[in-house]
Image 1 (spheres, rainbow, N blue to C red):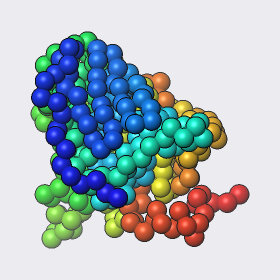
Image 2 (image 1 turned 180 degrees about the vertical axis):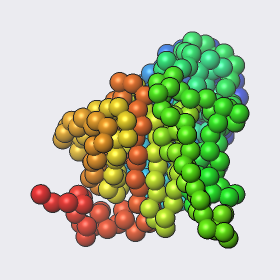
Image 3 (image 1 turned 45 degrees about the horizontal axis):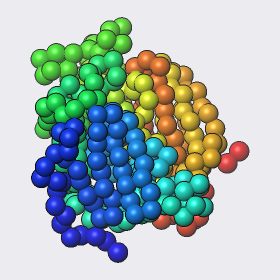
Length: 328
Ligand SMILES: [Fe+2]
């Protein structure tokens, strides 16, 4: 059953720490100086406020993404592309066996609206949930202003490709995207393009490394090129992926620079399946039945290659397609 009745968006009065409390179906969200508290009829859970806001920011910005966005081992969302499940303990073997898990389905605009209200109210002026820890201030303490500019950034979603006429622009100092401190060695030259007369608007190339060196966010795949259902979604990574992503399709990873360590777990139980260290040039196909979290010791560049075909989740869920693209 989809819950589509509009709830009150948050309490009118803030709590003694200055933060408002939010209710969504059977779930309640409260925050204090250090933690976000999530409660449901059969349990309660807490997450560090910075980790919670980083996860919430990505869940909102990605439109609940493909498959499952675990905020941690207990709380998260499942995207059904039109509706979204909010759950506690659903993908945690211990919660399931103890009967403490809960899951509730909401129309996407409703959960989006409540999540946006929480993010706005709980993000202090000093904190940028998209930034690396070294490039933002503190998320903690009593309510201290807001940071609307940081939490409503434009999400890059190219229609064809970065740099095409009328499409997403390249980044530059002038447009407010200086080269990141970890990428000062990345050359900024652009390809020399010489189209035949009449094709000037159709033959386009750009320097992807230069583009990524100017990313001001971490763990935020942007769509830089589209060929039917094939989406190139590169991103720059630093510190820890703020969510544990549960796949509903195969994802290809191409490590473009530096190094990321991946923790790969069973999607439904959280049992550890593999640790993968990807160095520059390494390619991996993350299976359709896993969840994963990345650790990037310094800012690195990762190309995430997504297949946006809407029929894929059902094909994997029914076993019609094997969860890995190659069987060895
Ligand atoms: Fe993933």
